[in-house]
Image (cartoon, rainbow, N blue to C red; front, side, top):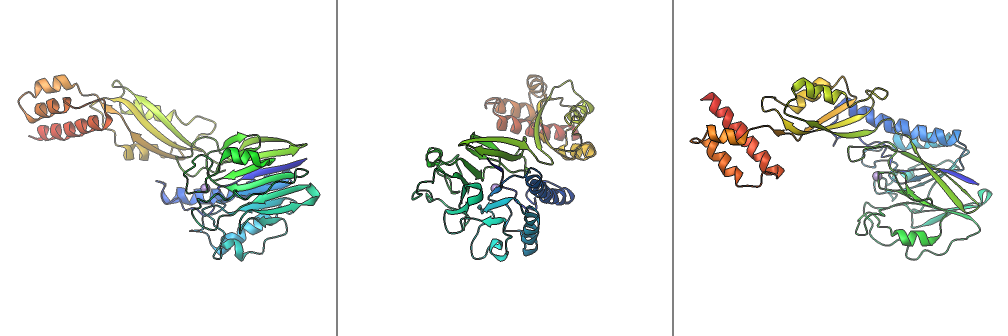
Length: 366
Ligand SMILES: [Mn+2]
């Protein structure tokens, strides 16, 4: 039996500058990527797996330094009984300038496939591991077209970073049916950050630590075994935190603190203060209530590790009454004009309310 842990897309070194995080939260997240990487390596030691497969985007070359790659090396050196196979992805390309080439990797670590698909043989484990590393940020060619047959007396594993979901992708489009027919016992995929088990012989493990609100839900690693030609894999949640996007339904009877309370209830007890929340306010908002999302976020900061609020509510104006009361002024004309548009359309409705807001404020000041 051969056992393995499959990870990818750690993006070590990422600075989270594009996220809305505070400097402190961004720094913490960056440290947590490192911690999770170390936890994965430690797990591979504890579980005594034969292989740790890292399918690309281990680090962010834009931010990574020589000291950082040395830290990767030191971390991987600890797992000296684990065979570690790394392939490069589009964020950690392996070319002349690459940090991968500056390190004397320990015996247990192989960075595979610098010049096309490469094979590493592990005779003690009767296993052949194939890998392909990116040398540039975009690849569209069919790198598998000349791929020869496998030695079926061995366990065969492929580690590759590419896009199985989009045939037009600039990020190494991979054809699922072609991959299946190659006959590998397991294909360890990287690139898509959401974990996707494609079959028991092929999976995206996803990013073990999610990077933004595009990566909601559980994130982790894959543990697998191959024995007598049968592969068995399990997804293991492993991230320190998860991103949660939650819609909250508001109605016109709710006051400001009703809304605040409803938001506070989102973070349930056992993981309180741990996860990252995006709350989307939906429904009808009483026209007498001010919702200022940044003020709300600030007042809820102590209840959540991270919270951002998106206001998608519709203000509860009685349009007919407003129009009647303002028959002869600009407010009334504006409402009649806007009623000609499709007010079920969010943009139109938003325009109506923003306009009303401005006109009504103006009117009060008069
Ligand atoms: Mn990635």
